[in-house]
Length: 124
Image 1 (spheres, helix red, strand yellow):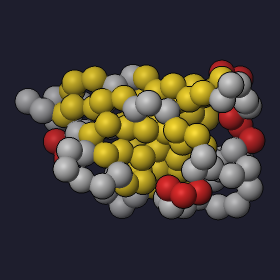
Image 2 (cartoon, helix red, strand yellow; image 1 turned 120 degrees about the horizontal axis):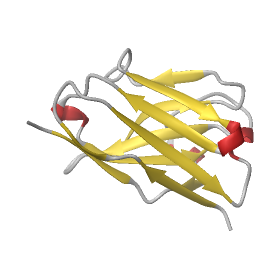
Image 3 (cartoon, rainbow, N blue to C red; image 1 turned 180 degrees about the vertical axis):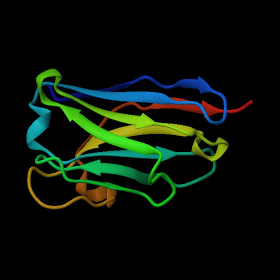
Image 4 (cartoon, rainbow, N blue to C red; image 1 turned 30 degrees about the horizontal axis):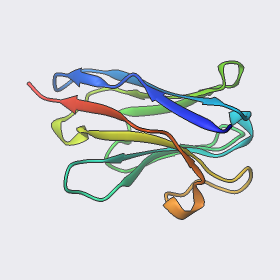
């Protein structure tokens, strides 16, 4: 059974850091494009970062320079390190699997499997 589980969310003050993890079971995650999305209350889900199977990555302009995506194939996990967090980063963060080939994009129709999400709250 294909499953993605996000972890690492929580509450942090502005300027703080968190590291989210997306761990896969039932399939080998390193063959696929993996993306992180987020959805804030009352807003549409948006793409945050994406990494291809060969490690090429992209970031939304709003997080560029603050967030870093990486993958640990041995642990079947993709990480999202978030630094210098702002209140506007508050959202539920989701990871999702894209196709095995191609380039990163944030079209949700291209992503087949999704995790349940992890809440990130940035406030003082």
